[in-house]
Image (cartoon, rainbow, N blue to C red):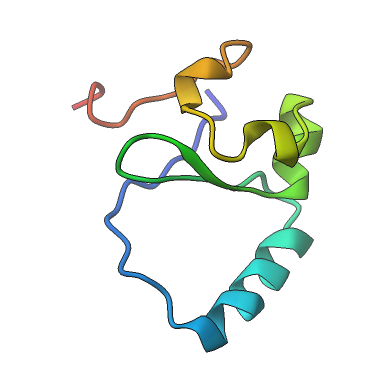
Length: 79
């Protein structure tokens, strides 16, 4: 169906790697959206802006459910 997702608990990233990771994700042609434990958007790369038509500054910090124009796959419900 064209939906890909990865569900994982991620340890905090060391500061010296954060910039490198953000630069790589900014250049990715794939949409990357990261959520925290409360399902709030913590990363929304330029490809996600393009795909979903929502600027990062509108998505960041918002609960994923508040971006209602999008159907989200929930890996917990697909098991």
